[in-house]
Image (tube, rainbow, N blue to C red; front, side, top):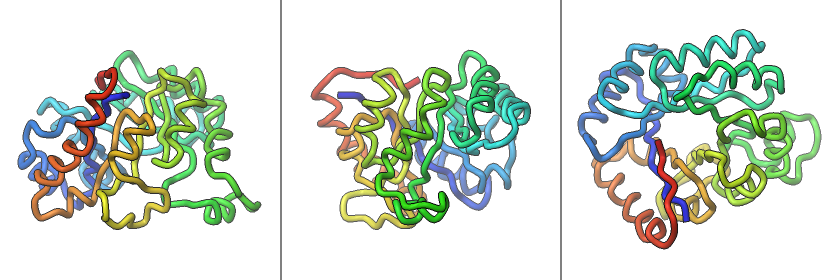
Length: 240
């Protein structure tokens, strides 16, 4: 059984609010995800600040552009010291090759396919055709990235399937995590931490259940408690 780590999605309105949460959690959390909300508000300075505090930054911009532009963005992320970043799989093989070649030695690059906010019906509207199997659509989008990227972002319910498709060495990132009994919000394909771990993920991404909690540290502890028994039942795979 893999031993996943926890990343908190800092989808907060200001860098001050984000850093206040980081300070509040202290050494309890190492990984933080910076997406377009906070990235637009704070820019690279926040990434440098988090890296300077010894945090692992997951830069989630889902780049989807011409190859030269995507490669430039990946190189910039690597220069900031980010540990993980996303590209959109629908950018095609040439874009993925360019992005992968620009990531350097420390930045991991993972591909995003079908967003967790979309179910089969919603993705069918995007594609202009009926979609009966979202997992198959994810595999189809992943195909050009196999052997190029370090891993993939996968919805919780598809993680076991994607693990089998991508192989044991792929780094799988799972958003859409909600505590037992909690609301899924705008994630149509969500799961609890324990369910995601059993499916074989490497990094859980949790946002609002922590950032909107009255006691974020207590929620982090609850998640770690849910993970720990399963993590002790088998071998480990360290998360850098």
